[in-house]
Length: 331
Image (tube, rainbow, N blue to C red):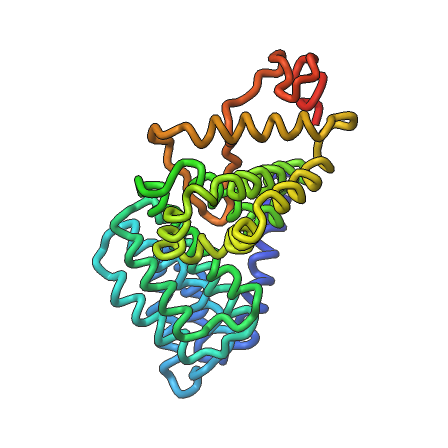
């Protein structure tokens, strides 16, 4: 069984290489094979050099397959530069920019650019790297490499993601608003990628609850909202519509949110019971001032409860008198 699997895998790899080589001039086949070997060995610097050697040759200039190979190498190369602190990041980044300027930014090339962003995005836990990442994202935006609206949306999420690292450490932003901004991010960028309907539903409920909190919170904290709008514009844009409605008529918007939330509660739950849960949850969250664990967005992010976890055998907070597991906890 093992031998047959290995043989099948070897045949598959050989077939893949043949597909690659058929679009590359024969004189470069040895180098192309070496590039693929280097990729497997994670020797990305050597793979990049061979790709550039081919593209700088008159017979290999603009070869689409080599361009694809190079586009595949750069995300891994740049991440390696950062992880190894080898002092080559800026040099390799400039080569990457030159590469982006010479290729046609079709769907495939945009996908590889997004992959580069994703690989660097994962390194945001390092504070010293965040300014470098922002420079990279700014450059992508300035050059308008991402033409498709889906990819542009990814770029918008990157800005909001970078801001989250800042506002979670900012004492001028309340815990309530930190959680509200995170919930808005999840609704905008993460919910559609949720692996299960249950996870997506949880994010939607959390987002609606925090919209209700914003409406209640806005009137007495307008300076904080102005501060967030000025310092964290990408994150603020995710709640701007709710804030605008809160300015016009907070009570009306709260009622609308309450009606929508009623679609997600256990059948038989009364609106007054749900309102009581929201009021209690809001009071609990708005009174907390102690430092909370840092929560950031990385494209996909875990759900953070706005209140303490309810035990399955605890009384249900809706006031029904039943245990939580037999009431609202059933959903």
